[in-house]
Image 1 (cartoon, helix red, strand yellow):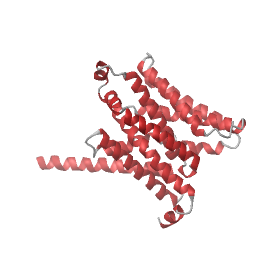
Image 2 (cartoon, rainbow, N blue to C red):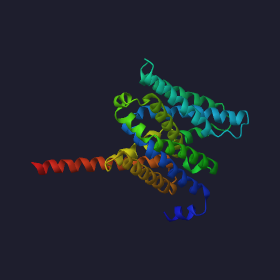
Image 3 (cartoon, helix red, strand yellow):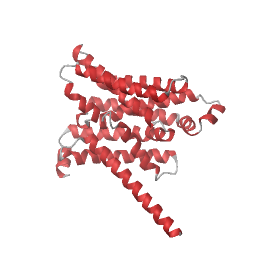
Image 4 (cartoon, rainbow, N blue to C red):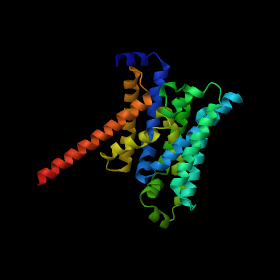
Length: 286
């Protein structure tokens, strides 16, 4: 711990890592709550894995065609938004099985990303960092991009809070009241896709869903309202990302994996504690 605190004051990459974890946690708390309540975790999973296709394409264009200003996150944003729109339209309008389309986008997005990265000179070794995250590589430019995405996600989440609430809890009643349910559902998916892009920088593509759902699941045990759940979820996410950075720094563990292990352990311990408490109460009632 002392070594980490000492290095934190000296090295910008550690400061950037902590800031990116905090920024990601804000969007994660707001959108993660909607994702869990609306039960669209599987859709978020499909979007998150499609992101690799956009990142791989951006890296390829950056390296082969010397588009130096093309940040891989830009490609991730485009791929995530396209996946969200396609999945949303299929879910609302098409007669195809939704899970089949999500699985297809999931697999094709990953495959396209791997193909692009394999043809990109000098970037083959970066595949693992995109899949499992490397928060210690976040740059100052990445931070500003995360700030922009955060403002957009948080702002729209607050402005359309009541509409998203209606879509998540009582879609049929919302339609009867004249709410444009299809529009707000697609908007929610697009915000989910942007949140996925934010979280990819923290824990990578593979473990995005864990960070999007575990803090919210834990917050649900202590919340009496959706707004309260969002605040607690953001705070729990900040705690998990910060502790993941701190605990992984000394032994040089993968930060994303460490973060998810901490979040998963906290969730499992809470489940066990609640279960034991329930058994004790039922025993006393007898």
